[in-house]
Length: 567
Image (tube, rainbow, N blue to C red; front, side):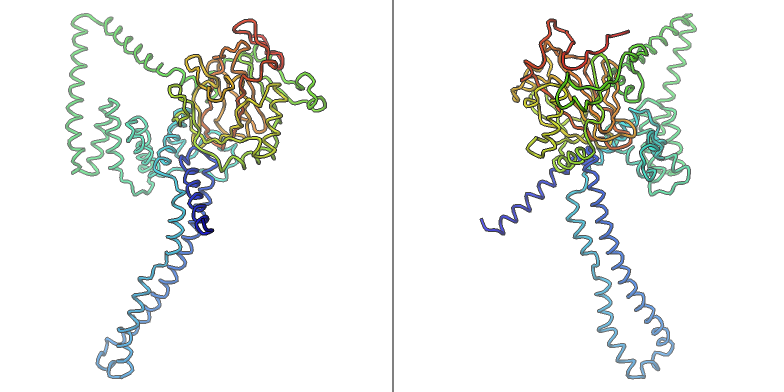
């Protein structure tokens, strides 16, 4: 194969790599930063194009002004003007040559470089899926942190004042309308109503927009109708018809809503009349109680999800003051390990059951920068184990990108792995590679277990190293708001703190899974979250972590015993 063919193949390979790296762009803030520089290059090209166009228009303007003066004089006495042979010659010349030159100037495409750059860079642009994914992420943040649409639209988010952002980002009517449309396309009528109402509110406040109020009202009336709210649906429809009396769909909906509302009122009146005739006041009260009970049951749909969201908001923590008083900080040397005799590490109890400990100042700024540098080009949409197929797949409940690093990639990775082994006393050679994750817009990982359960015995069969005995998690960035690691079974929340790491056992010494370790990564509200984790497996730990005598024996000889469980 000649050198030219090799170059072509390398170029094609590079393009394919870039295309693969830029799928699901919204799932990684780290990779989204590249888009800012891409957009900056486009703006530079666009400004060059504008300068060229302005120069062209200036030439055309000068030509027009010159001819305007000339033709004004000439047309006052056409025959006298053309009686001079030079004027006649110049008229022939202008119409035969100079107007042709002007035509070429007008038609000249000054955008060639800009269009070329735009075409090349377009392959790195976000897709429709990215835009929809980012919209869904905003809706997820709205629900998780109980934010109203106005707070999001004005950029008045919790943590913004702590994030050192140089500006406050706001949303236009078009932005709100687009969010509402995406929710509508997924039959999410509640969010459709909320964001269409926000768009309408901003229009009513005088914001200029190409989006018409009638269009917003059309979506708004239908979304509230779909939620069973006939009165507001009718009210919005009437307002729509005030703006556009000939709106065909609104006229049809008006009659339908009025008919349905009339039927509902008649039915309610009949129920009240029947209750009075039968003396059924008590029955009506009971019916009301039943309806309230049904609503309460419906509110309990997905109880873990609500528990998870409460913990993300800093609510629902179950650590009592008495239990918390038993947690402590200490200098830790892993029973006199040579590496820590002179410089022990700082260890803090985060939770008692399961025992979660945090190590402070455990990874340096330089190490974090190198790990991020190594991982960033490799970031791909994070995957999860499918318990049915045993294969890795993407999932809507894990919104992030991740990369895997080995000790062969750089000495810093080998050094980090060795540090984890020295501190935990566990064998790292059988552990999984260091996984680096970067969370995108609203990035999260919903409640899950790190270990394989009894109903999925083949979860890690292909690794041949047994189950995941423990989890080590580095925090490589601070997060202004959101992004906590929460344990939904026990009501614990661990906040990201750059340079620290948390550690817990997923399995009891007996090998049984500790179901209290079910945890989740809360959506990042404001900021950028980088983490890296090491999943440590059973193989190689036979002489490092003694088996327990009882199935649920929680004691461990290598880390300090957790404080007693106090109610």
